[in-house]
Length: 489
Image (cartoon, rainbow, N blue to C red; front, top):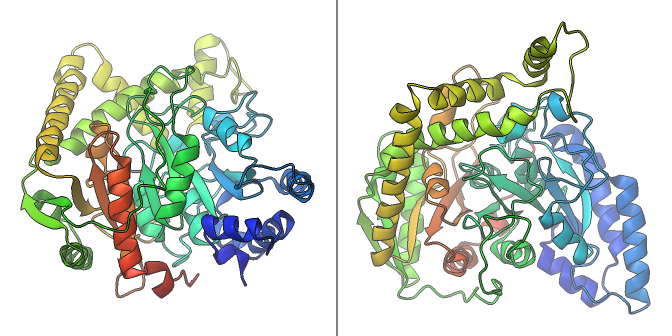
């Protein structure tokens, strides 16, 4: 038995039945990291010694009958923009290369309460800005299905680590598709929760009105388990919403009879790869077989979402990244004449090309004379996008789209064309603009063996609906039984 092939709920069961120990689980993952990390390059920091000590402590508690948490001892990987007390939180940037967080993000506190072991911090696009994990200061993460391809981004390290069995599950963050798109590229499950369902306290801010922490897992049940842990109101985050606690695992009924699925035709037009389109059409037919009612409709506001997203996201990034000035806790240039020179050189040297591009764009749209023309107008369009989705959800329970218009592309193929890279977010950004939940699940592979992702979008706080729709489809097609990453070069 290869422990690293197991889902979290399978490991949980084997721990309960005393078929495996916490130490055996950890050793299996550390051996796997030792074997595959050199190819995949998913980690920024590996916490081997910390994890070993924690595993011994937890196993002892289990042996003594003192451990009550059923997930105790299961390892996890954490995207490197989520603060971890006493451990580096770099955002994959030179600016925070040596920053050690003095506190834990709320999601980390919740994981610690369950005695889940943090196995390490995972690579990402710098400050979560990018769609390929090529914009990291430290390394370029590779896609385990084909090491010449990108894993997607910005949570590319998280998705690649789960796909490569380096961790059983991981946390990512999603500002415009940064959980769902890499999940699609790496053939795993990625859930972006409703804005406000999961606390953002301790998540290094990129665009505060769009960012959301969420799970990346091998299957839908694991996604529901992890959402159960991290969801909930947090007094430290004013944008977190006080909702009644739900058990998302209980929502997995394996039944979609009568489910109303809307398919927006705008998402299947020009720009969508033919194999992706065909895979989604097959998925639609599968849902019909399973008893769902599927109907095509028009969501024409979607075409304005990409421009709206990049105006709002860059504006908020420009504001949020103002704190990285070389004065307090970040990288500081060695030579400077005065305060202005210190700011200029520190930020020029500390930020990468993509981050600088977005700061400049954001500063421009917020500047006097352009604020009304761009930022204010984008906020108005945001309201229109929300209204369009509200109208759609009066008729449908779930909206089905591709996660990405293409499968994973070659490393280096889009880095010199940022516009082309931005267009890859066309299917995901509207979900963040409207604050909705969305999940990406693998549905097929293309002729080159690269995974294709399907996105299911739900109304606000209807995670149970999209999780059950994803779970029912997943149980029907058994993607993980048919396809596995090949690590081909």
